[in-house]
Image 1 (tube, rainbow, N blue to C red):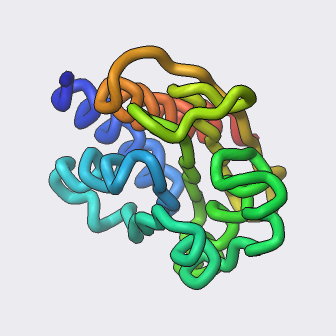
Image 2 (image 1 turned 180 degrees about the horizontal axis):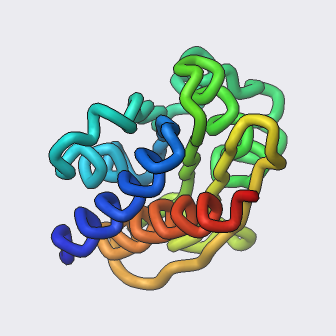
Length: 165
């Protein structure tokens, strides 16, 4: 994998956050803390990185991030409805200024007809702005899907910050 690329992207993100005096938090599922790992590879990140919650199970998503158990049952963990609740919960827990949420199916199991392997849902939140969410479909083996998810999460955050007025 191209860890150096993720560190470079994280450095760019850190510069944007420092310029704006903002902090960031993450709510991760299928990436298992990889966003947090990429960010904490950047020296000085403690000035802008708050935390990363790895909430893999339904119980963890509910008890740690406040995700609705009813919605988990109705929509499944891999859905924009759930990832929005995950990122909102992370912001609430930390009072960070920016949040990233990720949940997906990295494989090799877990796919359904409506949610194939490589389905990953993202949400980005900045308080007082609308939550932005998307669903992406990545191909490749488990770690490739996870890598692409981390890259997308970081780049999506950079784009959101650059678009902020």
